[in-house]
Length: 178
View (spheres, rainbow, N blue to C red):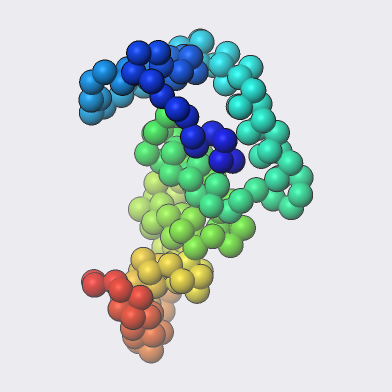
């Protein structure tokens, strides 16, 4: 949704939407922004035309066969890291799962990492192994390396030296140095 990406900003008169979200002025460098949770920000996101149009575009995309698979990964990352929202590993795991079901290798890799560590739900090495292999099959370099590691060490299933060599070689070919 490209209209939201381009905001012309003046130092003397910041955009009113930016003020509602507690954006710093353009007068000085800001190394870290405080979290904004003002009621005005909530009202702005409900009533500002750009936010309404973005919500409508997302709903239309969902109705036409599903949202963009990368969107789910981005939402998962926001909840996993707590950027702009409260940190919620259960929701992060849900959105990574949605991304993986939509065929996104990055989402599958991140969900595999959560399944391996038990973040946002129970640890499940067999599931992590499947997810890493799924990510690897979709060209995710980290997924290739982790699939090789799981097959090499027998984590989450039986050892498979030939499969491990295959994924290690594919990861090295794709530029993974580990």
